[in-house]
Length: 84
Image 1 (cartoon, rainbow, N blue to C red):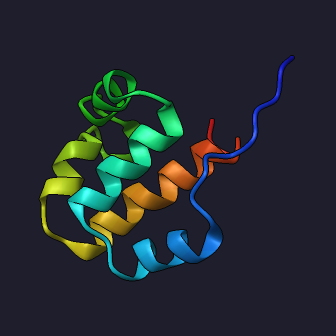
Image 2: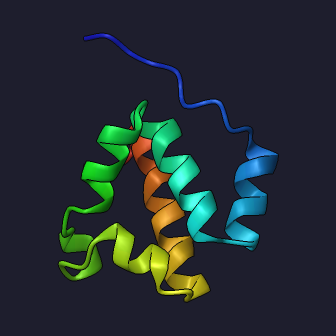
C-alpha cells in the first residue's frame, strides 16, 4: 500500500507541545495529522476505548495537562502509524 510521511511538526515542536500541552496545540496537531479540519473534528468528537469512551475533545478541553498530553501522544502514534 501507499505510505505517507509523518506530518510536518518537527520533533522539537512535538516535544514542546508535550511539555506545555494546550487545547490549541491538540487541535493544530489533529488537523496536521488528519489533513483537514473536517477529519480532525470527526476524530476529536469520537469516543475512544483507549480514553474510557471519552472523546479526545473532552480530554483536550479538560485543562488537565496529563489528559492533554495523552491526546498528543495518541496523535503522534497515529501520525507515525503505531496506533491500531
